Every structure is written in structure tokens, then in C-alpha cells.
Amino acid sequence: MSVPSRYLRGAGAHAEIDSDAFNDGAFILSIGGAQQSHVDLADPRNVFYEYLRRIANVLDVFKPAGEPLRILHLGAGALTLARYVQATRPGSRQVAVERERELLAFVVEHLPLPPGTDCELLVEDAHDTLTACTEGSFDAVVLDVFSGADGATELATPEVYRLLSRAAAPGGVVLVNVGDDPPLTFAREQARLLLDTGYDVAALGETGMFSGRYAGNIVLVAASRWDPGWTAPLTAAGPHPATILTGADYTDFAGTRS
Image 1 (cartoon, rainbow, N blue to C red):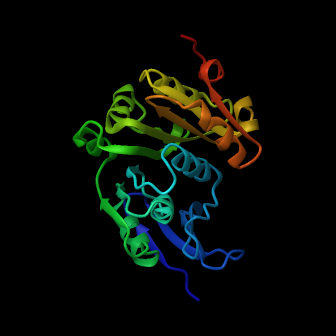
Image 2 (tube, one colour):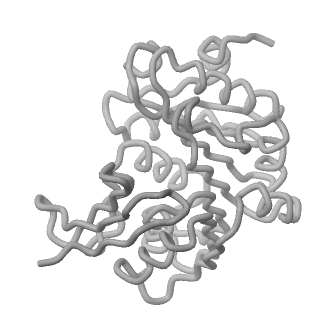
């Protein structure tokens, strides 16, 4: 069976969608030969990538189970989280932003969203989207475009972090995925930027990541108030071994203290 493929002019690389050989009904999106996203069409609740699972876990706990959300996804990928939100919180109103027009069209053509999904798909720059957002427009804002210092964009600025927190409604959350290599200089910089918003902050990741000796992903979270009751269920939900940094532990990781 042929593998769907499309050339992405913006990225200068081919995107491909392969079947997951170990999971019937699941697919892997690769760009330039590097795996980017995993989607389980048979069960959208199955989130395979660890960092996305941690983001999904936060989305599970910060509002009552099943309550619809208003959520903004900056960096659409294969729309894994949008599918998860639809499956776990039907009736949610979602917006997914992707700068690469060909990628978004390719994903929707070969991995269509479930019927009934209310998700507006926008082809535009994430900064432009944030600038146009009305204050408090979303219950959750997810930024998933960072991959180390070499992949840093114009979004890695104090202004953008201010716009992220402005877009979140009272009681809402901002979630930022940061991929980095040792010694995690870029991830620590982004942790400081989030801390500077004045919101309560947390960092979620595989326990070994916080030593700064390994490459991987850390999920940064900002909330108008971090509920201490979230920590235990998020730690228990994994993926394991899981660590959540808050308070002084977070500022130690970020490299600053108030």
C-alpha cells in the first residue's frame, strides 16, 4: 500500500503518513523523515507521545471532567490534541493554527477529524493569532512549536508569553511544550519567561529531564492559580517516571529566584 506523501514548500521537506505497525487504526506523521505526530483514529483518547500525554493530563484536571473547553492550539501538527479534546470533552470549541498550509490540508485529507468536532483551522502565524485574541478568549492555550535553541522562533519572547497569558481566561491554563538538548539552556530560558508573567507556574516532565543531562521535552504550565490538588493526580497519571516542579523547585530549574 502506498504511503501518502506531500511536499511542504515552507519546510522544504516531504510529509508522510505511515500506519503504526503496532497499533491498528493509528498513524504516524513524519516530516523530512523525522516523526512529528502520532494519531490513533480508532481511539483518540490514546495519546502516544509522552509530552502530549502530559498536556492532555493537565487538560483533564483543571476543569471538571467532561466540561467543554474553549481551546487554542498554536502548532496544529496532526491535530492529536484536538481529537483528544473532542473525545473527552464533547462540545468543546477549538481553534488550531498552523503556518504550513500544505501540512494542514494534507493532515485533514488523510486523517480527518471526527464527525461533530468544532475546530476552526487557521493558516496563519501564531503571533498574529495571539495579537488578535480578545483577552480571556480561551480556557486553555497550547503552544507547541519550540524545539531547542536552533528551532527558536519569534515566539520565544516576553511579549509572546504576555500574549499567551492574556488569551487565557481566569481559571484557564497556558501550556508550552519545549524540546531541548543538554544542558537545557533554551528550556530554562522559556521557564523564566513564563515565570515573568506573574502567573502560578509548573513544569512537567520525565524525572531525568530535570537533571539537564538528557534531550527531550518539558511541558511548562501557567495558571492564574495552580491548585495544589492537581499535583498528585498529574504525577500519578505519568507517563512514568514523572516529576512536577512548582514553587522553589521550578525557580531552581529556571535558574532564578524571586
